[in-house]
Image (cartoon, rainbow, N blue to C red; front, side, top):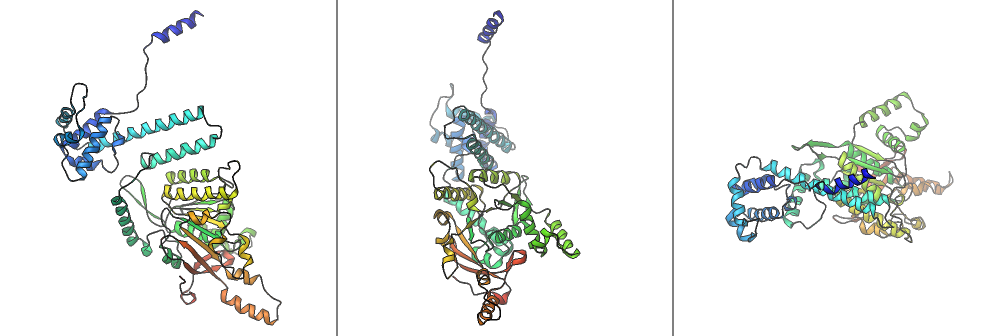
Length: 495
């Protein structure tokens, strides 16, 4: 008992210590002084440092006003700044006196960028503390309808956004910034293979109609079973990964120059099944032969050569089935952070789940999924190709060509998508209607089959930034490969 009393006494008499948030007022003062003496110092930090990164409120205001003056082509010094800042008592020193002292004590602008990086890094640490405190507080007092997984996904999203931008509050940007981005995109398109503004799919006729796969676009690839949705998606994904070429930047980051890094969510097939398909496509050995081991020596050589060439491709597969849209988004963000990401493929939408709130219909769940995919496109600034099933009403029509109204379970798929493409192979339907051999109907059927054999159409039913129409492709069923049609077999473009 006496020991406990002594412990309480020591606690009561011991000086109380507390932790302040990370900051460096001297670095802030040194940077502001350097800018006031020589405005060129501002341009050494302007591409990454913002007023909110300063710890001291007065320093934030000084940097904000100085930035505005310098960007407007005016001089920022203690005399010009005091007009906009007013007068504040800083512990016996007026603001004009404080600005003059900052300028007087600034000795060099050489270290301006180092000071700026220090201020920025400390601001990120303070943001991390804020996220951590919120995680702890929510975990202690979580709402009844919030699961731990929801909290983990929210925290992961906040951390990703902080890592990407240095802050997690959105906001407006000036139109001039958007114009600069648009001009940079046009310049990159001019220099890229194929002169495309987006990522080339490797299918030239499709690229011409779409301009490649555009960043932040949600592209729905739909079709009935047996049409080749997954085959077309894997063909495009592989072509992009194979064409990948990166360029190291001075800061150590890698910039994609051509092709891209691909993430593939295979919710239906295992990674091994998907890999077998791609090996068949690239080697020309049918996948059923690979699975059975029914191969000649030269077939096995082709397979091993194709596999060897694909070893180093930036192609990443997630085969987890039944994941939610929130889990998919978290994994995609992690992939971009760790490996990079230029294209995401989801096979397919109907196998994803939403948050499964009580009383929600499947239509509401699919709406949540497509809205989440579109938000993820913008968040990651990459195109997402999401596969979708079509309703059975296609089978009830004489003309089996799919339409936007055939999209299954939700009108939100059509609404949220930037591009909707349908895969259609007339050969599939004609083949299933083969009449008895030796009859006149069979001769007529054979003529129809010859016209459509080995051909497929990609019907663009919606495209926000381009024309709709149909693109003819060649399809090799035994190796599930889509390729460009030979020049003589191409159909006139349909718009």
